[in-house]
Image (cartoon, rainbow, N blue to C red; front, side, top):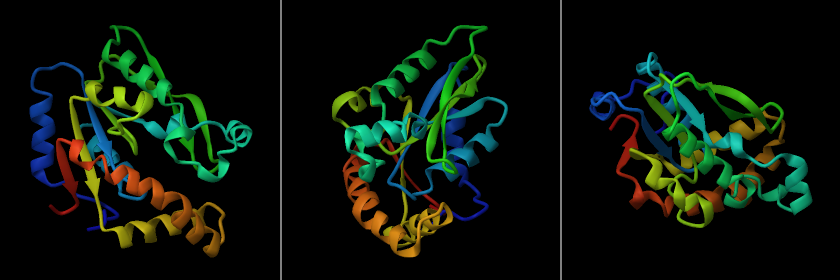
Length: 213
């Protein structure tokens, strides 16, 4: 099922978060899923539901800059595991687990309108009790990515119908400047190989989230 435009997160998932936060300590929730699965929509919904205590820390802020992707010859594969600063994201999560009172930690943010990451765009406050980590490769088990799962207090795999997910991805690419054919080609040649890799991490999630489930 696709994520609705104004989603209502089923109560059983909200109850799981409340239970996670019972001890008053900071928790990191990982939301994982293929491109177009609705991870950002779910993250925003959870942040709204727990607005006083939560913040989102997206993996996408660790995209390598376009100029670096060009230098490495990876621009046509943007979104693959080796097109991110995975070690940087791991380091950020370590810092967030050990954040001190009075300390603000800054995270980068990915801006789709310019297709670039922006450093220091998200201030994470020490009183934040729920950090919502959101991204494709949080349960990937190769390279630096493998260090992320042990840093998560809970991990959810966001599942959605592939046809609807691809339709959403195609529309997203068109909205940000690609032609209809370019959008379809990018989905088939780049997004789908990544999606298959991410789907392989599903068994490592502690819960599978489905809209309306």
